[in-house]
Length: 145
Length: 126
Image (cartoon, rainbow over all chains, first blue to last red; front, side, top):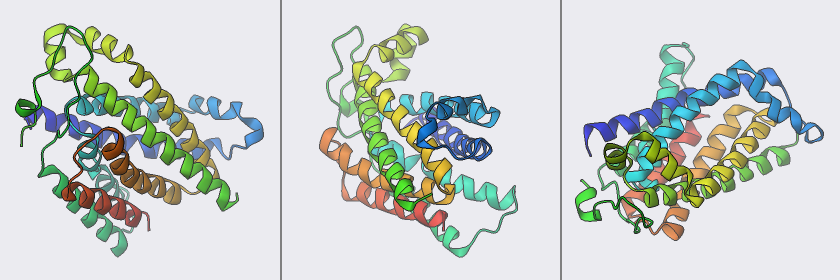
């Protein structure tokens, strides 16, 4: 793993952690959506909070696709779950919310899970790339410890 | 809103996002290392090659279904139920799907990681 790859994983974590609360706030303003008014769910993107949330999630998506191009799905998902910890810490130190014992335990579990997965290799299976101009290096040289 | 509605929406989120993650992961493995490809051919070539991949487009479709299911679920239920329930179920389901469909070597470390993260995420909402 190079420094640049850790930066990409950090991008996945941070953009994802900020995007979802923005969406949540926006949808609370939009209000309940019923099955009889399906078009209103599409109009939800006109809400500014939802729109900015979607921008953050686009940044998240670009970083996520980059990470998936050189790492396993079962590596990227746990490795970027520190975003949940980030959210709880923002709640505690920025929003001054009460963080319960159960939440601290949750932070501990997520962190332990991240520790477990990041000690192993990032890539364990590399199917042949589609025929084209660029052929990636073989697994042995790409799966850094 | 009835709990059955909320849980149906959560199940839809989990199924659609697992399908999306698996398809997108397969697509990006077919595209190849983005850093390397970017250095040789530039950004447009990377984006073009990614967009032409059929698995990528199917993955986007599945993610769109998951996204709108999430909007439904959030408008019906509390974010403190919807977000952790769908996220922690997705972690475990993804580990199973990655092993079955992507043939990733999900060793005990990775099972532990998926379960710990899923449990932690559930607790974070308590």
